[in-house]
Image 1 (tube, one colour):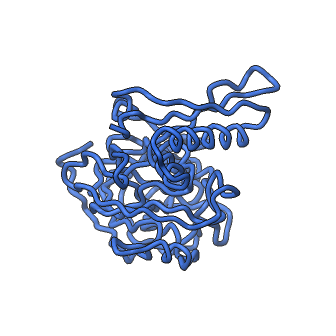
Image 2 (image 1 turned 60 degrees about the vertical axis):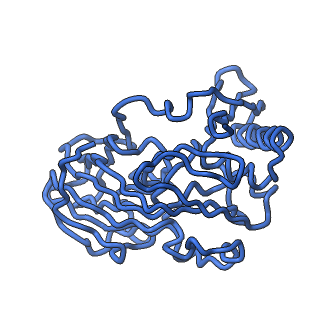
Image 3 (image 1 turned 120 degrees about the vertical axis):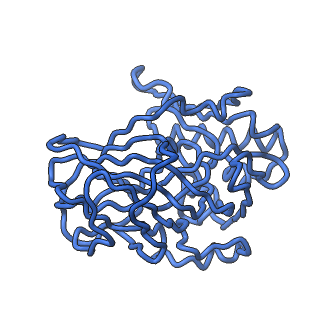
Length: 316
């Protein structure tokens, strides 16, 4: 993190777009080494508010999902370079939401009805955030969608992640992390959004604690890096905020990793419901914001092991 890094430019909330398109006009053109502050919207583009109810989930306009601020043209960036994204700071809003959206998520076939939980958290202390009366999730702000424009012409959906980044939903792209993105077009055309207050690895119900917040990043270049995919480096440990009291862990074992992930999460939902009295959909959403899917074994064919780690500290 860089407490003394002052942004040279602010990219306002209105300066956003939906989807990746290398013909989008730049919101700003900057030199390498420039610090910018982005006023990122939540993934609903403001359609969900602190006053929203579950009925609002059913009426979401999916043409306005996952706005990203930008794009930013970086002078001198050329195909084959790497864009260096130094993530300095997040300035959370104190409001967030988690939803089960029908047809979306790892267990969409099991959870077909909409559900919504609205969060309120301390934006200054970033301590814990209550999930109804039965769980507190340590917060770790990050940007779920962060990337550059692809070389292929036309408009491309914002939903899937890509070789040039995008909707990766990597919770460790937090303050202090440095991300390297492969550049495919002149200027890179960097955009960022979909900010989260917290998320588990896997984001299993399809949403995290979706939360609008300002994001401060520095953009730089490495010439001729020729990256095949994004990579990043963290400034220190990445799980300690959840490790304090250990984990409950369930597994899914079989010949298909996706089905194994489904089984591991389903088994955790069953455990949380039986042991703590949650409704199934609340357990599912809680798993999405704080539990981690891991591939535990992928060499002992024909069956692989997927594990789901649920932090006990959330239940204290």
